[in-house]
Length: 281
Image 1 (cartoon, rainbow, N blue to C red):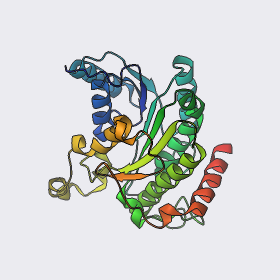
Image 2 (cartoon, one colour):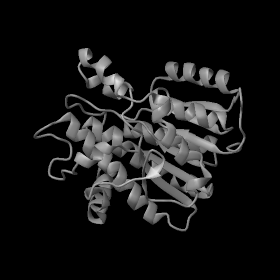
Image 3 (cartoon, rainbow, N blue to C red):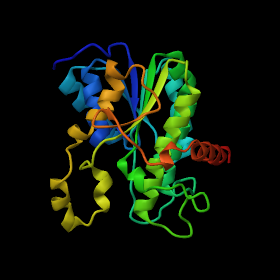
């Protein structure tokens, strides 16, 4: 129980915090003294994770709240409940993510990967933005992926209704994360709020359950542990080295190059408008 205190008094919300990279991030930021809020779909699992983190870190300020990222209504309800309970949010880590082998839809009837990986964090961030600004200096950290480099935003068929490919849907959603990061960072210049995205590495988490079972043991040899995968997320959430850096994409704790698509202001603008349309339905 070596509780550091440099995040003491800071409030931190981590999505997808009950397993994998999110859980490691929650554990380490708890160790640094932050108050941790974990939005969770499975509250039973969340309760176990909460108890585990408290036992390991000695930090009792670990809160779990219901939120289902497959439902925009649930995201709205979480944001409302969060703001009723907390008046500050210093660190928002948009970490929750999925990859599907076949096309599925969210509770709102939207293709699941696009809904969970992009629309849900887009909505959550927008709803919590006033609270984040009021807490400045504050940080938003979006977990993206090198997969974005093979991604394109298919505006003609953004939900893969005509032709679905799980990898393409995932790559598109990770490109969306970076485009969202860039545009949001520009709009927040001067507010004391920074926004950065990152590649966690190829990590052995549940997201890769779409790999055939017989290949998983072989694949895992080449993958990082969730603890290693969480390093850049933890760095962006907590390090003073990135105090004034915003709108960037990181890999291995360093600013990294993105694809040309990810640098397009036009694409970012267009995606933002499309995302707004989804949320106004």
